[in-house]
Image 1 (tube, rainbow, N blue to C red):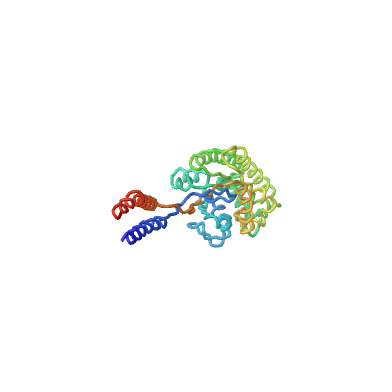
Image 2: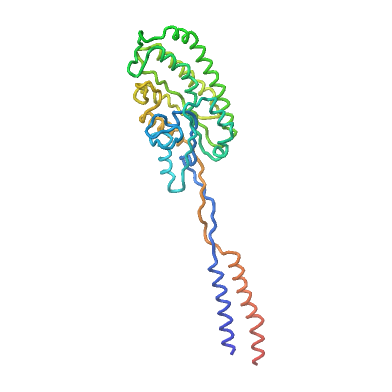
Length: 328
């Protein structure tokens, strides 16, 4: 009788204990990596950042032209971070946008949540601030995709004289507005994101107009001043990606200027991608992902095990002595 009782009792306690041991769980814990690839990347600005003119580009979709430097870097960084997590790229560039337009977008609040989460913001802006002054001059000189020499017979002399008389003043005014807006853009971004902010310099697409020195000299001086504004205002507010340095002397092959289109072609976007990548990957970013930790007992398991141990102690200390006394 005693043997059957003890066998049954110990079996119950043993089963309870084993059941408790099987009730384990693994918690999700944060694992922090230090990487040289920005996990969350944002592009802002104008048609250059949007990928205007590339195959697949539409004004409503910045993600369908695979050769744009934003999309090229997205593919590269996604592959680099694949083993530890994911990469996210967002492109809010708008073709035709000026620095004033970018300020309006930033102040709209539409990007606040995205900016709060991003690790790096890359901006191409300001070219349209100047083009409104320069393109009319190009047109008045009779310069076309077929003829990049001054065509006297096609020059609108009256219009040209009027434009040239105010050109320098207009350009200086545009540069002053750009500088004011650039400072505001930097302040707004520094207040909305903890990520690094990067501003691209502007290249001179008209440098190949060697036979029209008045165009090349004027545009180069203007672009130099534009980039000087970017340089002297950076401080700790943003870092510079010097696209202009890579395009200098190569604008004819890296843009569509032969078609009187200042935008970068596929080779140009590849050059910009390399320039952006070199600067971005020189930084260190923190990437946090969740992984399962070591298995541990659940509260239920702990209580079952403790109950089993307590039951065994009661059996050994109280019940067994009483049973032996009863059968003496």
